[in-house]
Image 1: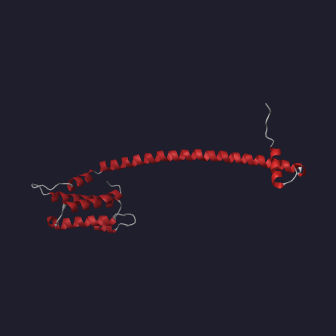
Image 2 (image 1 turned 90 degrees about the horizontal axis):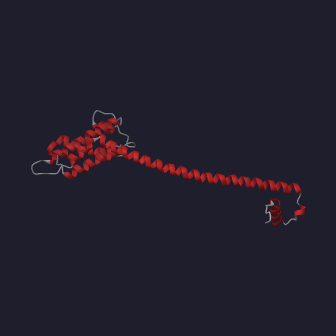
Image 3 (image 1 turned 90 degrees about the vertical axis):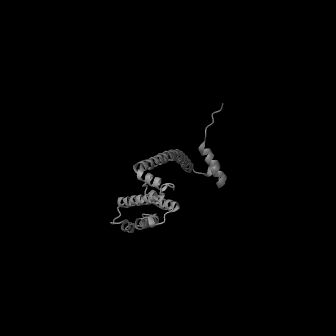
Length: 197
């Protein structure tokens, strides 16, 4: 077996001759040593860059993996938070139960529907108070709201107007099952914006 080794100086001379068209004997020795050193430094820097690229790819994979796990944990925590909020706010379940009361011959369901809307409005008032809006009445609190921080403000107004009609007109206000569900849905959308239910 023959001993094969890399003679970098010879390789560089041949490359230089190829591109420069100069005889190797005409190149000063110090220039050849300088070119060889530059080549070795270049290979060393290239090797360091290669190590950096490999490290970067491995680390990027680790961070991405950690990110997926963190995102999954946050989704689980958010789900648990929503579930605990539902447990903390059973009043909303009662509102839904009243709103879903079916008309029967022996019972007037409109009383339950009215009660559901009034109860949802009380919850809205508590939400506004908890959010720091001021006013003695619901209308004053809603006027104090910044629409940029309360995207469902118009829905809150619509639902509150139905509540006012029920409160002022009583049983004279014609309330259908469809109107009840539409109004309760307005409250639901407001509450969900603030994770209140």
